[in-house]
Length: 443
Image: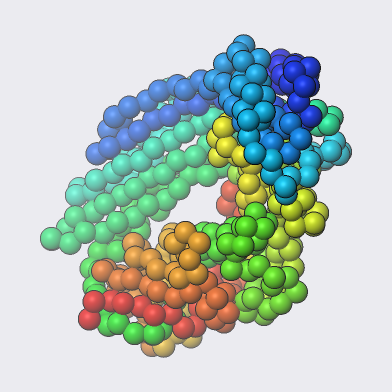
């Protein structure tokens, strides 16, 4: 770990010696084992070793970005970024890279027991899950698994020196059953950072159960009705909506539908959402962001009122508000942008069965996601996994069904939230009901 931090520091020092005003190096070493399964057979596996660094160089307010996949060639990347900055136009909104600030620790980011499993043991355990996903004949099983370990360092010329080690286990098992000319689909993810969270048999069994339950899907009559989002769908949907709307960069660029709404009601008074990058063992948990700024817990919505935006150093400087430490890179050559980490949606007083029994007509979405397309405020989504509800009872699975609404109506029309929650990957989510949604069912 010390070697990668030392390499990043030397890269920063070299950039300053060339004449740069500010320099940042984000370096990483990553090792990943992957296995793919099709038709219940292993179709491929590999070990991927990735090492590299991304460099940002500022000359005044002009930025140059370069990267390398070899830390031994970091000086060349620094030179490239320096020369690009010399020819780049000045950004009048750039203020500064982050100053050094103390940050705490987050537990559960690295598991020695998880990393001690051999490739053969990982594959064997995953295949037990694949076996569990086909409890009878007629099933077709596919999926994949990836275990990764990463050491990353962020160093800048203002004194930031941040170092982190983490491990993850991610995968999915998909199950399809064909019976009497009918097809049912099911799937279950594997998400975690510990050996305890690696339970392929449980995932496979749930995938098979869902596939069998979704046999007999039918079309529903088009109309306006209630839509219930199960635990994962609520998390995925609200996370996607707020990651766009409460994103400080989108606000600064004028593309957010929540611009100028701080302190205003933007959702049902039943809704409160916090983003917590310090959740122990969370998939997106971290003590600092991809710029080395301390990650902070942010209250985004409180009882329907928009309280905060998430920011990185650039958007915070441009908006004149605090940096919440939510910078995330999508690659070594990309500029960091704000991104949510682990959202926690506050539970309420209802049971899921009460949401269903209290619905005259509606659809229950499972393991899905509702969200805007691009920066549009319109929400339109096909229902991959859903159940039709009539007079308070689940009647049958649905097919050829589309849901349409807007982000404003989605947030405002939440009328019930469960007290049960799903804790997964550091996020916490109840199920919830949206009272009025347009459903196109083909009848």
